[in-house]
Image 1 (cartoon, rainbow, N blue to C red):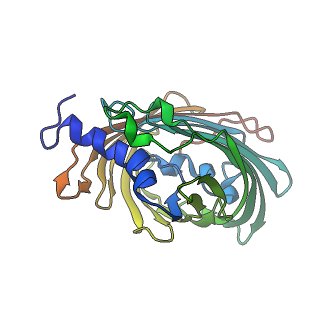
Image 2: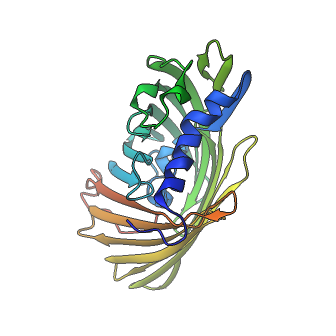
Length: 323
């Protein structure tokens, strides 16, 4: 892979700084970091960060996602996600989500499992307000022996903690109408300490992340739908991450659009409804992040598949829509 503005040695340095230098240069203190996964197709995968979204599709909905960050870079981050949610009884819905994040050829890996429950209140003929919570946790592991470094002394004194399971809880609220939705959530409310490195005295601790999502569907005709959407993420000690996107659905089949992640990436979005039940989505990100004055021109790729069963009550297939 050719990067016109930054060479691969600098890119590898970005990863190694994340994995090694932060740990080895600090003699004591508490290290915090954003733990949540990043998705470009967030409008189709809201259950991953908002438990109140469970059941909002009003049928059984299954999503599988694969994200490859920084294509062509050895040890770059990768994410896999699978989730399922559905209404189960009157106003109650259940959901489940599994997310696996890895970086550095297995140096750091986190597998997160969450079970969600949501309760929906009708506010009008078409308006629905849902309250949700999730319980679960994450299995975290660090293996410094997997690092490929030229100077073996760089990781001297750092141990390799065994897998650490950290339980957690989260909550969210989600309001929807056929043409509008808005939600606020925090999927991990607890600040668990993941690792303590002795004798360095470094504590690595989770930080909770607040999400706010909104979108609007404008119907020009039955064959032309337009939806702007936005997702904001706020973590203590980190800048606000803001995603802005606009997508178009033509003839209830072809989806395309663009997305902008503030000071981070520009994305091309696409998708196709193979049937009313099966949707395939694709996102290609062009990174524009500025690392210490050097423009990082890497690319990322994300695939998504969503399958939805027919509604048991009406025996009908789901209607394509943009959320």
